[in-house]
Length: 327
Image 1 (tube, one colour):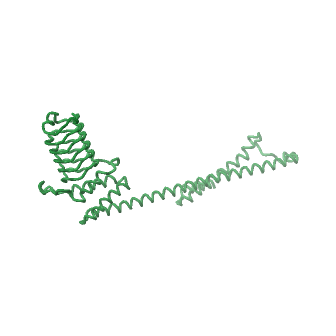
Image 2 (cartoon, rainbow, N blue to C red):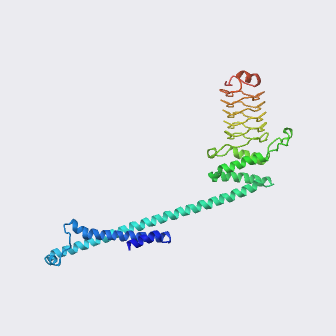
């Protein structure tokens, strides 16, 4: 029976509860057999009696010895039965705990699957919204994407790649001349920029790609754009005060008249047009300033230590500096 139930628990195509029940029966049978051996032959051998008592030996026992033998047998049987009950209880308790754990795992997996399905549905709807012709619907889609990135860290990078692409695709096209660029960015483009600038940067797989965007007077105050690709961007008169542009790539960017008051530009590639820009208190420590146009830029109180591509004399000749400017 032990062998058959053990074999059945491993080979039959039955539910898990049936499989574990058969395994429990097999273990209980094995335990009972082990106890029987212990209280039978094994016990006699340990007592120095390799063979059972003969009929003659039993008749030679006194009445007291027979009573004691019966009581000892009863005591041994009770202990064996108790042991079986304990073993069975442990087995079935373990089975119950295992089955409960499996059920919880299955429930959690089903919940995760349902949540991912909901995230996918929300993402699909948000993508449809940002493609709408109506401004209010597009705005709703942009903020829905931000919420998805918050609720689902695994979708964080995808969401912000989509938002960066939205900005690149909805700014004025190259066919629009610089003279005809709108004075301010469209409301939805500005909203996308704001969302990008306040994202949870710890979940970034890579930095925002905003190369060649053309958004004069964009408001990116306090935005976190560390390492961002802003190559060729037109950000004339943009508001970038206290923005973090550390290690950013601004090759060929136009930041004429931009407000970079207190901005972080350390190690940034500023091969850009910064004429008339407000860089008061900005941190340009280690910035790369090759071919950078600093005509009329206000560098009062700025940190210009370790910059390369230009000299203190060249900066003083074209920009506004004061006693607090650090070279």
